[in-house]
Image 1 (spheres, helix red, strand yellow):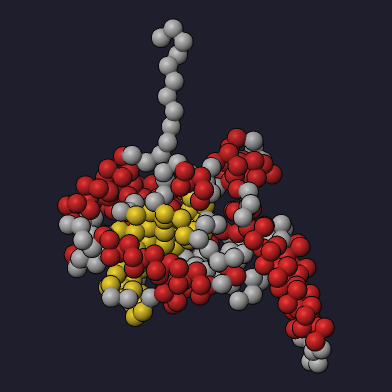
Image 2: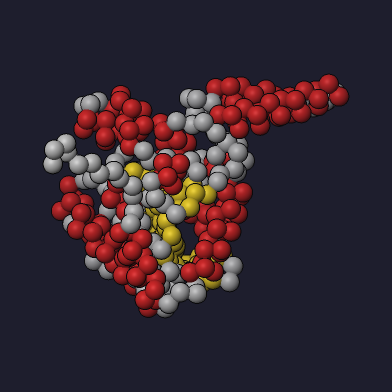
Length: 324
């Protein structure tokens, strides 16, 4: 599919794509034109491979936020069958930033949770741009209990810049409900798989991020804070977001090296926004394989191993002071 609007570091790629598009619109293509199209396509593949094999942290953020990147609902349409959406938290309302429902994945019946951002501005506003309110996490916990009750594996898609930071959300217990959700996930007696498909920002991501397997897409990021938020705190200006991104060590390579994630899912050449179907196929294969591995474990084994997994997470160094 079309990549849509180009990113700032993709100017050469955009030029090649435009030249190919112009030639393909020719109604009477000669042999020379066909040869030029083939040459340009080879050059495009080469350029994409070189560019996307060496993205820096800030460029990774830009890819993770691409407006055409597949969201939770896209994966539900492409990789799952018979999705039945569930609404409401039984306390306040239904948060459209948090999707929940039953679905089928090959031979597995599952329950899916995931952040949803929306495509159009109207959809994005209704979904709070992917920033869930407390009622979103209460809805998530309610559906987690259903998954546990009916012994359904839980699959969580993480894609949020963070939980909604407004006064109303704080008044309704935003921090408390995220903590409760994390605790609930840590004790769930059913398999849990979490995948960061785009942005994985702060507590909003952690609220549905405690799983037996935690994976991240190649060009997604998973961080304690957004680059802009970090830059605002440390340098008092969002202009330093690229510097903050590099310091946060949140790319898939960093996360894998530091032991924060279990697996990295390779994206199609040029990013998931260029080929939704191929990315959905890869994600489906990963989920099917991982569910097959986890279904052999007992409920107690899952909980015990999940606890130990998060106890061991991260890499750090210790030094003793001289003369101590």
